[in-house]
Image (cartoon, rainbow over all chains, first blue to last red; front, side, top):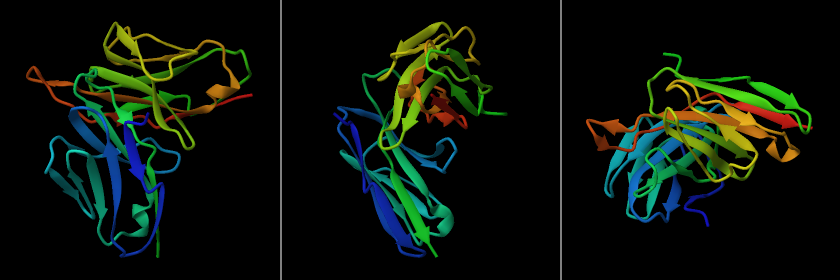
Amino acid sequence: EDQVTQSPEALRLQEGESSSLNCSYTVSGLRGLFWYRQDPGKGPEFLFTLYSAGEEKEKERLKATLTKKESFLHITAPKPEDSATYLCAVQARGSTLGRLYFGRGTQLTVWP
Amino acid sequence: NAGVTQTPKFQVLKTGQSMTLQCAQDMNHEYMSWYRQDPGMGLRLIHYSVGAGITDQGEVPNGYNVSRSTTEDFPLRLLSAAPSQTSVYFCASSSGTSGGAEISYEQYFGPGTRLTVT
């Protein structure tokens, strides 16, 4: 039973076409939700941490938001260099601190 | 800081061989983890450690051993390699406490080891 589900699995956008990626989670009690970016052949690179519903974080063209059951990664006016796989992970209250559950990722392609 | 380093970058093994994947971090992080990443499966936790001398199993521990004798190093041992262990392996580390409060900190990942077992 997946605790973290990401959608869509793949997304193709034209440069400048804004969109959102979804991460829904079923853990009972969220300690933290994390977004990562992964380029081909490399390790995941940390983007954001969200701790409580209503929280938002921004970085360049990316904005992450959190509700009680899901998180969105909004991409505004994307550029081809934003092409990557975006991973969502959660840490649950009651689990060992440091243990993360990952979703399968959304592969984003931005074409010129 | 070098961050999280992993060696080797690539490795080919024959079925039944053993080997150790190395992982080191220079950030004085308490928590270290090993993941494997397979197409369509996402990142799956193999083993993790909450400090020197303390390790525990993750979701897919069979066929792997770990130990943590120092804060910096967290090697992953494949006891008898099988084709099902063909994967990309990532090591990660994170801090865990701030002034005694349990805060969930982000994990920093190494560049990965691509392992093929024939």
